[in-house]
Amino acid sequence: MIDSKAETGACTNLTIRQLEVFAMASRCASFSAAARRLGISQPSLSATVAKIEQQLGLSLFDRSSRSLRLTVQGERLAVVAEDLVRNFEHAMRGIGDAANTHRGSTSLAVVPSVASGLAAQALTLFYRDYPDFQVSLHDIPSAKAAAWVQDRVVDFGVAARPTEPGDLVTESLLHDPFVVVCRPESALAARKSAGWGDLADVPLILGGTGRLQRDVEHAALQAGVTLRPRFVVEQIRTALALVGAGLGVTLVPRLHREEALQAGLAALPARMPLARELVIVRRADRVLSAPVEHLIECFRRAALSVAADAAPRRGGSPRR
Image 1: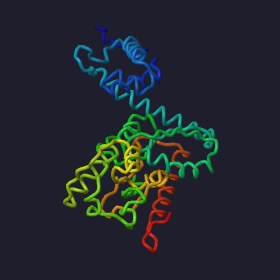
Image 2 (image 1 turned 30 degrees about the vertical axis):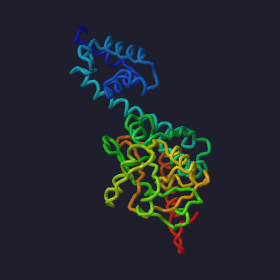
Image 3 (image 1 turned 180 degrees about the horizontal axis):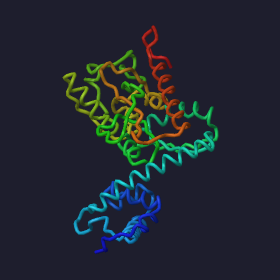
Image 4 (image 1 turned 135 degrees about the vertical axis):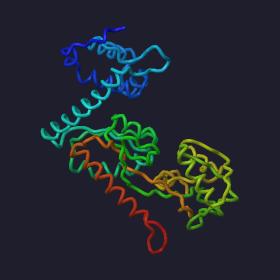
């Protein structure tokens, strides 16, 4: 056991990087998970924690049990470490903005359907004003995008509304109704729209992540329809490929419509109360730089453009 008496000088010698590593380890309650999120090896993380304990003369983690748990002293330091790391990030962002608001970098996480369309429009708008700014764009599932924002891996995200927001705040960005995708030569393709009754006699392909599938199943249940899909797949791209092979029809969010059309398929509005809400996800305690705030505003403008294009014209069909 390490002596619990810590010298004041040792406390002041801790670096921001050490505090960042310790804060992530305490948050994850797992050295391996924390190492993955920080992008370092587990031995490196373990060595950093051991060095902190040696400097402070304190045991910060209880290693006697199977799970990794903080000691009383560790819990106290975790609170201090989180505050110091957060304040340091805010201060550095402020310094960077004051030095040069047109140079810098940001990272964001968006769902794949946003990355392939809406994000491209937003970035086009953004680079008109910030041509030298570096943007790292990660296209990942909604749950992972929210987790990356929560863990400060990215500055903000665009995803489905998190079921457990925690320290996150959300802002509604886009109402994304579903469309029915089928082969262009099918009888269904000749319709202006399709409801549950139109899908009763055709094989259904249920695609997307668990949440998208649950949304479809819930909407069907509300309509008194029992779904018996022929295929259940995780990737929308796979669902579209199966439709193209003539194995059935599928329901996907409208942001996947262009992907379906590029694959030579037909996409018509779903005549059912079925849609997902896309939101901007950010941490409540994170101050973003002026360029990043401008990028978020560009996403808002792009979303308005997408919504306007999807609005029916007088003839009843959406604008292309």
